[in-house]
Image (cartoon, rainbow over all chains, first blue to last red; front, top):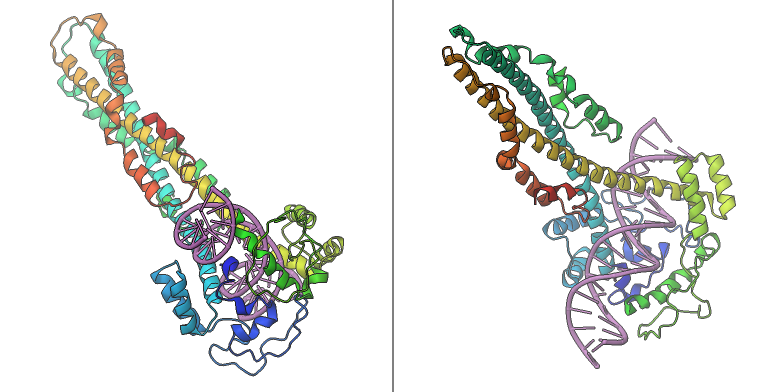
Length: 218
Length: 218
DNA sequence: CGCTAATCAGTCGTAATGAC
DNA sequence: GTCATTACGACTGATTAGCG
């Protein structure tokens, strides 16, 4: 809520940068006071002073503060101004800081969520592809069996009036045959296309997340 | 909207820090922004001096600067210091600013990319699901045809020695029959499961992006 | 030094709400 | 209705910590 801070944070009036120091971080210890240069600031890092736990020589929030904020964020991502003020005084921060922290936290949370959903979707997609492959090979298998069966029908219907040997009647022979020859049916399966597709269009480090099933083909 | 008019003075406050003035902003300004609203201000505002300026405060980079930076970023996301310095002087910025801009640009580009890939993947996933459905129905169809064919074989092989009527021999009748009855085969298709899954696990505004195909079922 | 990742903050637009 | 306030989101700039 950067925009509306006017109300309760008037007194602060954005003294940008270093001017915040007092209000923001309780231990500023840093006097460097080059309040004038926004950029070019090459400060030395921590001076010996504060070390310790939440040290925060700059305007960083202390660990304790962040923890408490996290807890409250976990309970509720939104922040009504009543809660904001209460939290602020609990933490010794300006209400505005609390508001900004929540805002940023929400934004970060969204990105994280997106990443999670992406990898979940990817996993699901991969397994769907796998199932699709299985279906494709099943279709091939069935088509061959069907073609065999129809050949058989053709044969049977065309021989005029003979007695057919009883052991060739049932469909089981052809079934077994096809099942035995089932290996090469993957020829038409698009698994390899999809495979390369997946790995070419993504450059994320977790790209290999859910591809375990592929080992079944190797 | 009248809503955001109140920011004017906020800007002024920052700007009065002055530190920015030189390095930042060549005026982004173009103020046509808030022009003439008679905003009733009631806050104590900052000190102020700045009355006269027509707006133009904000440390934002000018459009021209951003465009040039974008172009260079498009060519190469990395930034060697030679290039950085050259760019900086071209733009009238601190080299440090250029570096920061590139850093942020890279970081944010990643998120954007992730979002793009997410929606691309989702689209692909949906079409894969669709294809899988088609395959499932094809499998059902084939299984029925096969079963018909085997019944036929059974019949043919069991009738002793008759002359089979020529018009019932071919397999085409059963094929046509199945194709005609193709509609209800979706009964076992998991499309609805998947459908609800997709819409429950995502809350993005572009969730409906690639579901056009679903209209084929409605 | 440069980079990434994380963090903090300011700006703008805008929707929801309440007062006049 | 208009106007103001407030809260939020998206975007952007800047800082810091840590790695190589």
